[in-house]
Image 1 (cartoon, rainbow, N blue to C red):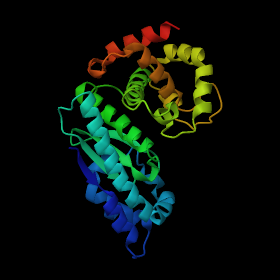
Image 2 (cartoon, rainbow, N blue to C red; image 1 turned 90 degrees about the horizontal axis):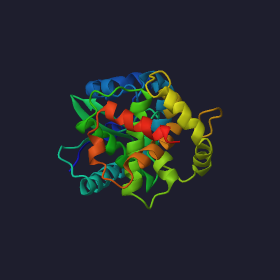
Image 3 (cartoon, rainbow, N blue to C red; image 1 turned 90 degrees about the vertical axis):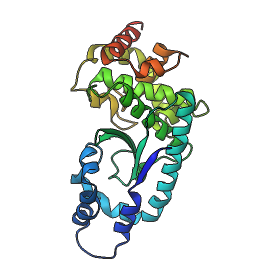
Image 4 (cartoon, helix red, strand yellow; image 1 turned 120 degrees about the horizontal axis):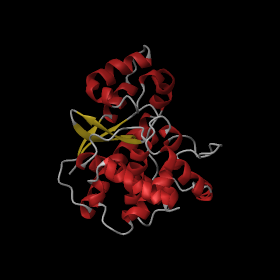
Length: 275
């Protein structure tokens, strides 16, 4: 069973403390410093510079966040059970449930050399999408354990494969969930899906040109659902899913978890070139 560290309890104590003082300073001393190793590892997802503006609203949500923490722990356990049934898990799963600063709902980071799943409960989606999120991130964790310690971040081919594999896996293992749920962890993304599908040829052509670039990944994997312009926000998730569906089809995903980046990139390039 997954080992889950609950940092929401620490935040609840901090939020319920009636002492005055600057919230951001107290957060640093009472939450961050006692868990400095964790917060150093996750700074790309929990940027302390935004704490002064975000903390008052999070403190006001303390009751809601306690409930969300229990739901997050259940979602992680359900996702672990589902993935174990499908793949088999041969390594202990480490997870942290916490209050972040509203910048991400889930991610995987290495803490003390151990890939660790994080859920930011302040942005956790509603059921059944909470389990989709936990499963998506757990696929990333298992991928990291099996093959990707040396894969770069913010490189288009690496991110297309990683995110495409995670969405492919959740769609395969939770087929009752809509496409919107797998891509946005919500039920209302169909217009965005239709926009991506209508631009498929353009997206494939551009991705083929940019596969090895490290300066444009944010254009593919960030942004709002209604972002205007040539690339819809987070369209790399949609394109990655289409590519992994084409690459893997109904074959088990075990082998793909162990591919090197050159192997994965070659398969992506071939799939993109097929049109």
